[in-house]
Amino acid sequence: MPVSARHRALLLLAFLAPTAAFTASDKVARQQEDLRKMARSTIEELYRLQPRSQDALKNAAGYAVFSNFGLKILVGGGGSGNGVAFDREGRNVTYMKMAEIQAGLGVRAKKYRQVWVFENASDLERFTNSGWELGGQATLSAKLNGEGGSVFTGALSVRPGVWLYQLSGDGLAADLTAKGTRYYRNKALN
Image 1: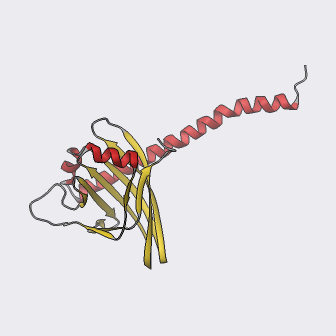
Image 2 (image 1 turned 90 degrees about the vertical axis):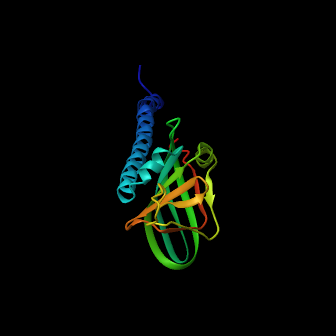
Image 3 (image 1 turned 60 degrees about the vertical axis):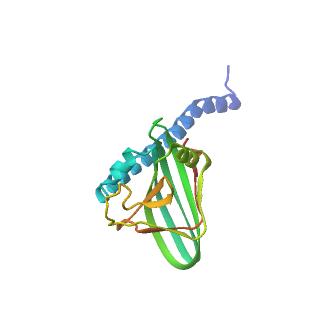
């Protein structure tokens, strides 16, 4: 019995469909693994630059690590990045994104990484499930060589119980200007 062109096309689709699904799932798994590797290397660098941060992360309800790139040209700019959040109690992993919008004069390209530390599970849960926005012209400052040896030395206090370490090519950043930055769940990777 001869096979029609329609049957050949259906057989080809039946053969290729599992391959396409496997390839898409492989791509997601690779992206997830790349984000976990970025998080590990960022945490290792943070521990090297600020050894007391190890205690901060060990005692936290969870933390999130982001790799970001921002570009500002003349009167405006923006940035984007990807990250991963880890829940210490449940050992859950949430893949996330960030986007920022900046206004003001200047020309600059900046690549940086951030480590968010959440002392309370409720703040981590809000961050990973509802997203987070930093707005306005808020400038957060850190005391890099403070006395007293706090585990959060070098971190920026975002709000009570939420700390942020920012690493750039020069090491830990002493300040962070938050201008319309939004953190949210990455639907494609979760």
